[in-house]
Length: 117
Ligand code: HEM
Image (cartoon, rainbow, N blue to C red; front, side, top):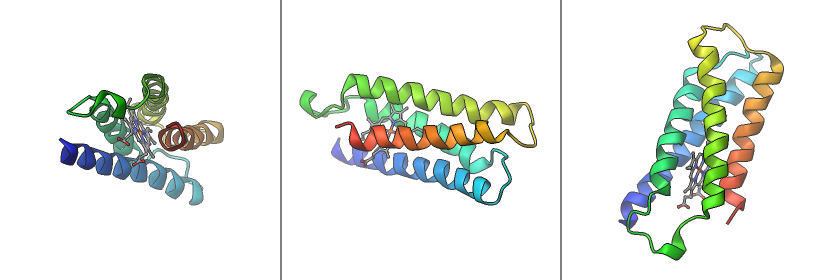
């Protein structure tokens, strides 16, 4: 149903907001610790991304490119692991390199979502 698709897309954008908002908050306050917004943003992105990739009742030609979905899934899993592992290990802070890599991957993944048509 078109409405379900729009709701999922809306939630997907909220998940993106959580991820990039959480990341920017940490980075700009120079406190390189993974925060709850990043953790839940990563979960929301993986869940809504998978649901968005389901055919629902979309016509075959309206479905996103399979290669694009594969690349996004890979990047999203990487982000998921990179935010949840330091949390599970109860790290008080992450290295600058690790944190910058998370931010870069978030931006690349969003870019794939928007520009890969
Ligand atoms: C950190 C992870 C992710 C980020 C930052 C992200 C970001 C985005 C953004 C910004 C859009 C554009 C939304 C729009 O134009 O309305 C998008 C669309 C989309 N994403 Fe993601 N995404 C992520 C993960 C995933 C995953 C894991 C999948 C599934 C494998 C996925 C599948 C899709 C699909 C199918 C769309 C197209 C929605 C549509 O136009 O119908 N995304 N994503």
